[in-house]
Image (cartoon, rainbow, N blue to C red; front, side, top):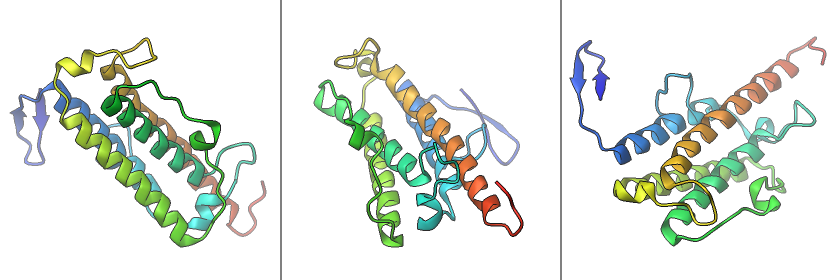
Length: 177
């Protein structure tokens, strides 16, 4: 794998596939992915009021999306560690926000960070052979699921970016929806 560093030089790295997947997950979450801002970069500066708002009435809020990502990163890790089929209930998939205070929002972001760190730790401990194991109850392997986790964070990061932008526009004087 070729890696370009800030000094303009190209380096050859011999990353394992597990290392590459771990790096892909890290970049989508809080690195510098090629597609644009990472999830945590997008969430930077979002306060509880913005997170709970519904600038697009039929869409999930930023807060719900953050908890949704956290829940799936937990579920993916649990599938790998416990080796069991697991689906999220509707309530865990997109939890309702019952406490919209600032400290509750910070706690939600803390949960997102914790679940992501635990997923990264689990992935870093996988062998190459484990990537080919079928996910219990699914017709795909661990490798496919982990690539999907990075795509999932990027996908919902894009939704959050649009909601954040729409929220900022809707509070400007003279803006009509």
